[in-house]
Image (cartoon, rainbow, N blue to C red; front, side, top):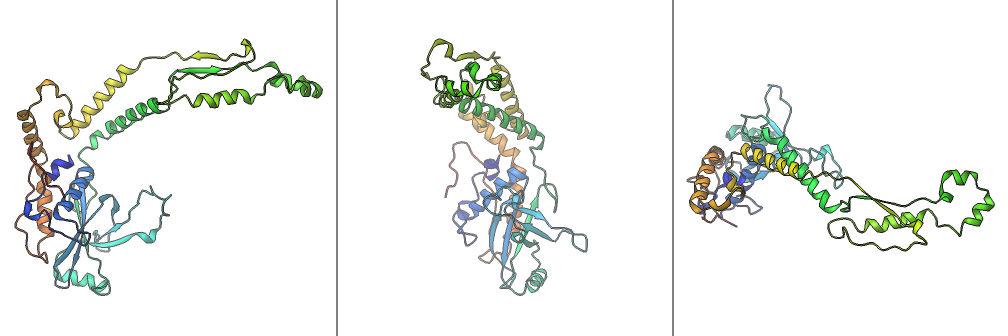
Length: 343
């Protein structure tokens, strides 16, 4: 979905043109914007100005870092708040601190407004620029991804992957319990009734309870995808000490898992309006250049609106660009077999 929104990038003339001090090009910016648009149905760009109101640099802001600030006195959203970890996912690496939140004015290219913001900031040396906030659900609103109807199926797909991973990596392939019979001398009843003298006398005769724990720790080494079902060798004093293997009764759920896996993948694909062939599914013997080109043309039409939205935003953002006007921000659609611009 993201790749078709990005298409083959902008025209070759813009391919290597840098837009900020990070030496990112127009195509770099497009790729990051397309990725956020695909995931969140929205994206954000940070814009710097000079005193003439000309745009001097444009940076991508990860959309998940952006929140709308509370309504101002006039009842409008005028600022956004930026923080790299609103969900507190990385607090083990860095403590979450409210002081790390940065506030920016929302995009407004009016020179009078820009000068006013710079004055409030304490001059151009302190002015931090503006943020262009785009939402697919309307002006200054939190967007809803186009695939929201398939979120449950995405979660199901993740669950199926977890089952496969667990079975391969952690499961004891033999499917059962290795049980040893505890000696009478090791039971609680014996310990309660035996005299201290008897306990001392028997201490060096009978194996200690931790011997079975040693066997258990050894068996753990024979689990997992690399070591499962290898043979473990142990020595015992007599046949009464032989451990007993109790197999689990196993039901074959392969058909159920296969059916569920195919079902959720199909639902997710339909949520993105994707032909299966674009995901390398259901190709069979019917694969051919003409069929693939037809699917490319179809999916280009599906993602045409998203590309147009980005073209429109870039045209607005780079109006009054310090380094000259850009003739066109038309995104080239994908063509089967054609090369894509690569940095």
